[in-house]
Image (cartoon, rainbow, N blue to C red):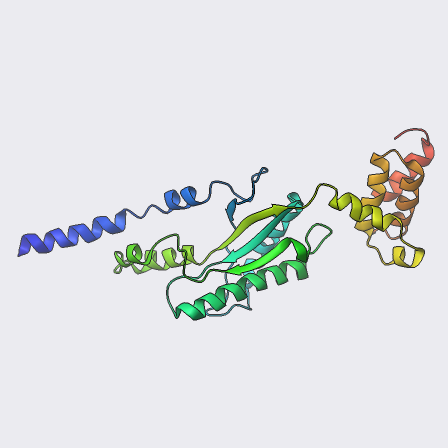
Length: 247
């Protein structure tokens, strides 16, 4: 009997020891949000975003930085279209966890658009998806082998409570060019409502196309609303006027 008990204790200890988190994550996520090349179907692990317990609407204050990192990813990669996929751990009711995960995905998108919206971070690029507890990184069976290791158990549940980015497609290469072209044909009233960065984007495009007349026009518009700590638009106006024949 003593030998059997020792065997069972040894087996439980060894079973908990085989949970290699880094290996599990690397096998599931071959690319990160800091890479530069992506393909349709790629799944990326988002920076950790925490919510209040059993709440899909309130993001913990410390997680705003993670959502800012997410927005920066979309700014660096302006052509990807994605699903924002949230997961819960296996604790709680399965149906409630499904609803909770979808709610959290919608909240992440809403916070990102509210705080970090830009010309490249806009609603049409995102679809909210919730998977509840259906797709854990670490299975409940494996977690249960560590039932006496409360610290690590909580860590394993936290790993399962994650957010993913799934690349579903790409925006056409001419999308932003057409968007800026549309802005360049605006009337004066509409132009006055454009932001400083919008005006710079239009001006820069004309400069790249060597259309100095239109570039100068929009740099002048931008310089009129330029923030006090910025001088780019004013400098561009000066350069074009001093060297009208050069790009």
